[in-house]
Image (cartoon, rainbow, N blue to C red; front, side, top):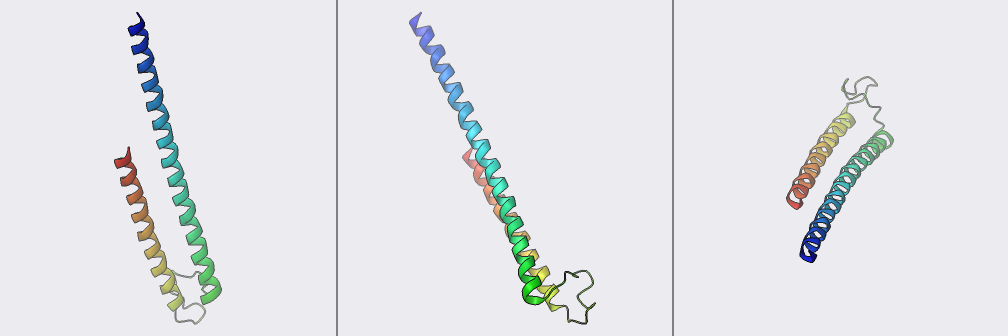
Length: 104
């Protein structure tokens, strides 16, 4: 009888530990995703602000920047930086996801 009780207790403890670990992993993954999104947003805002302030870029990427008689070079810079950032973000997200899949 004692053995049966011990076995049941052991099973309960194992189940509880597994559930807690899974919850922690889920929370960590969610936090990582949220952090990544926040970092991306901050990077985008910073880049846009810097470009607007430093290069006087008024965001007319589509028109090629010729609306105000400028050469449009600043817009090219904007597009290149945005492309690089997108690639970097995709890589970070992929690496994080793969790492967590292995971790789980």
